Image 1 (tube, rainbow over the protein chains, first blue to last red):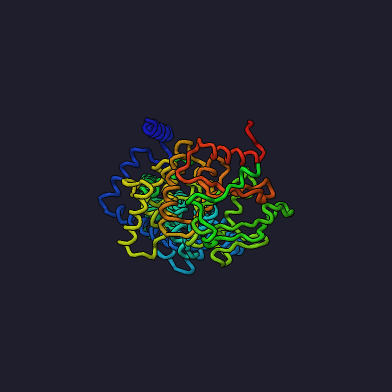
Image 2 (tube, rainbow over the protein chains, first blue to last red; image 1 turned 90 degrees about the vertical axis):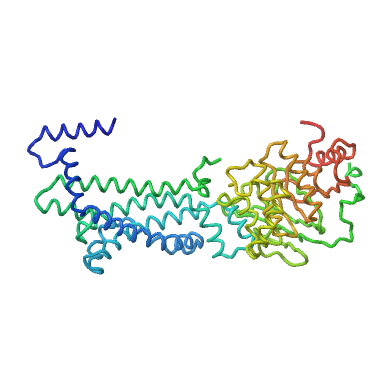
Length: 243
Length: 268
């Protein structure tokens, strides 16, 4: 209902200002329909998801073990924290020139930007999660004779997974934001490129908005994918009401 | 009063003087730094626990009994003195001495079987499964092997934790108010089960509680600690054979003796 009302308001606003280039929902829908037969849209979605996947998983792969280690050894945290705090406020988009300088225009530059955008928030989320692990779990693990590496793998890591899932959801959202921006500048395919290209190629604002809609829908599906992991039986403990 | 509490160790359950000393606490003192001031928590604790003995540490909350237990288990370095197990100084936690927390210590990401088998990483798969099954049966959790802790009641979680401790076959078990969070009926049942397990497996047990009845029902000896800084006020031999009749004259006499010892004789 609400969505229908919004669409109607959109249509109404557009028809009140006929001289604007902004397309209405109907023209946008036509734009989406236009994109499909070319097969281009599938190619662009795959290109964007491919970059997000690589950038995101590289960040996950590095941030989790590093975050566990930094969170565990408090001295490491003291050493690393100032650097993290300086890097954190730098928008991943500020890295675009450097990404192009290092990797040229292409997939690698976009993947690097996504990695930069995901790695720091994820690392901080892991460090925070480790610090919130109840001491009983760590003491129990030590009591059964676990050395630090085994303790991280068998106690610390599973204990942070519920909090980690929240971090992953937020980070994947960031990755999806960054990929669009990166594709506007650093590559010539993908959904971000579609938007810039549609504008440059003759002010096809119907395709611009169509691209935005597709970005929104794919982002929603990605988020849904991560959330469905939260329902795994072995993870559910972290999402039940805390006593 | 003194004569009442000076009961001799007659019943068979109490290890005789010939049993070797398992754990010895020597001149132990612990202080915590609080706002730059050194606060003594425990002072001058000396205690000998024999192999297979069941000892309760009893005292008001904040008297340092949990601190003492943590020091015995190696989680806490004493400020002075030392803890010896089998004549060897305790330097840290060890799988031969397992600490049982309240049911909070169960790992919520593992199933019942996964929790009980947690300390059995060195065994082969079949042997581990066999051992897990044995202790699942001992604590009466058949049918719940693949349940997760959040699906269990508090008493069941506590059983999981006791089974997880027993599975690695430790010499000593430290229990820190293990039944404190359970309702009174479950608590009574759990005490009975713990006694059965102790009689079957003959572990040395150190059990912290603030419940006088619990102490007199379970222990061979009750170590009564004074308020902070905690010191050993008195050690009471409980010369009652198991199963104990908790309305017998001797039981009541012992209980009232300890009540008087902590300054609460027959009055509320």
